[in-house]
Image (cartoon, rainbow, N blue to C red; front, side, top):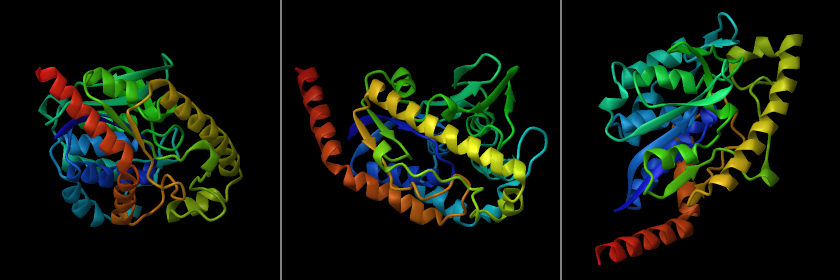
Length: 287
């Protein structure tokens, strides 16, 4: 077995691909010893760290009516996260970080101090609700006298965080955005949003203005994420082909997970190289 740590990026409904990536890596003989996650990656990472297999998660999520995950928002948000909370409570309710099977770190952004926050203590469920709080879309999470929003605002794929919690292990990064030359901006409140809840909202003038703002910010976040990947240099980057999926789209969760498995197969060459390099290090270390 080859020990690794994972850095799982954000992307809303695209995040089911992380389950397929995890399953395929396990089948290749990788041992996941730590996870750092942002947004959807934080959600998937937390559930795996709690001891659930990808198949168990897919079985339970597949039975959920995805339209029940979101409701109309209260306060400074278009949508509420009540439905998401109820589903996650079935996996993570009552768990603290100290209860998890492997080390986990989730990232969020503190609106008041304007900086990234790495969460590694306290309620796992509360931390997940902070890391998925898409600004303006979902309500911010008040946690320990901080107002926290989605970690993607500053760190789309938290490679450096994965290294902090597991310094001696190679990092495999999973990015849910393609390389810049293949970018396709897709937000769920375009002219025909896939999520039925958003269709009446999309016809409002203010929603149209918000859409333009979010599309522009999406380009900025993608570029920031790419620059951080270049700077932090994970040993392997895996990119599931999920660019056509909107952040809040209703999806076939098993099909999205299969896209994650496929991405691991497409990255087989660098992954095998990583395994060989890890074996050589172990061998030289034993001498």
